[in-house]
Amino acid sequence: MILIKLGGSIITNKEKPLSARRKTIDNLSKSLKKIDEPVIIVHGGGSYGHYWSVKYDMHTKERKYDLRGVAIVKNSMIELNKIILDSFLKNRLNPYCLPPTDFMSGNKPIAKKVKEIQKIAKSGLIPVTFGDALWYGQNKTFILSGDKIMTHLAKILKPRLCLFALNEDGLYSDLKSKKLIYELKGEKPSISKNKMDVTGGMTRKVDEATKIAKMGMNVFFVNGNKPERIVKAIKNKKYEGTLFRGKRNV
Ligand code: IPE
Image (cartoon, rainbow, N blue to C red; front, side, top):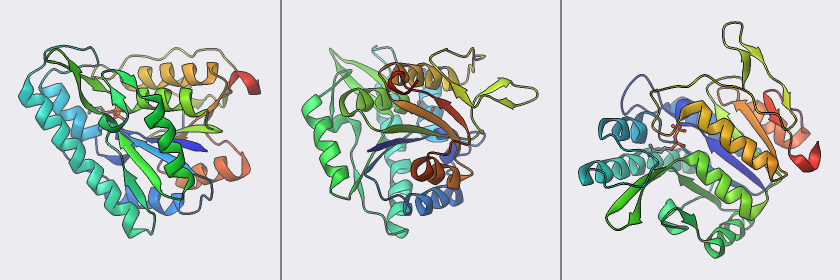
C-alpha cells in the first residue's frame, strides 16, 4: 500500500487565493491511473484552507478560534476536495471521499476507522482525505495538516511507501544552487522557516517525514509537476527526488 500526499503548493496556486491548478491536478490523476497498487490520497489546503486559516489566525494548536474562520476553512476545503474528486472521476479513477472527521476524534486517529480506510483502498476505491479545521472539544478547534494525517495513517497502516508531491524537485542542501539531496538515512536536514504557512510549510513536512522514516517506512519527496516520477518511484523504485530511508531499509 502507498500513501500519497498532494501538497497545497502543487494542487493550488499559492500566490493567488482560491485558485486550483486544475491542469496539474488532471496530470496527477492520469498518473495515478497507471498505479496498480492500493493507494490512499491526502491533500493539503494551499490557497484554499491555508489562505483562510491565515486570515482568521488559526493554527495547529487547540484553541477557541473564530467560529466564522472554522466554518469558512472547512467550506473551502470541501471546495478544493471537490475539484480533486471531479478530476479523479473524469480520469476514470474511483475516489472515495473521507473528510478527516471520519477517522479522527479530537486530535487522535481512531485506529479501527483508519484500518477500514485500508480495506477501502484494497477494494480498488481510492480513499481521499485532506487537511482541515477540526473540532477538538470544550469549544476548541485546531488545524489538522495533511502532513500530520500522513503520520497518523502511516503509523497504523505501515504502507510500503509514503510519497509527498511538492512544487519542487525535493529537498535542497542549498536553496540558492538548488542542489538536490537524493537520500537521507536517518539524519535530519535543516530547513529555513516559511512564515506564511500556518501548519509550518516545509519544516512540518520534513518533521513528519522524519517521524515516518523513524517508524521504518520509506518517505519520498517528489516534484508533482513531473508525475511520471511518482509512477517511477512506485513501479521501479527509482527515486528522482529526496528519499528518506526508513529505519528498516537503511
Ligand atoms: C491544510 O493542510 C490544512 C488547512 C489549512 C486547512 P496542509 O497543511 O497539509 O496543506 P499544505 O499542503 O501545506 O498546503
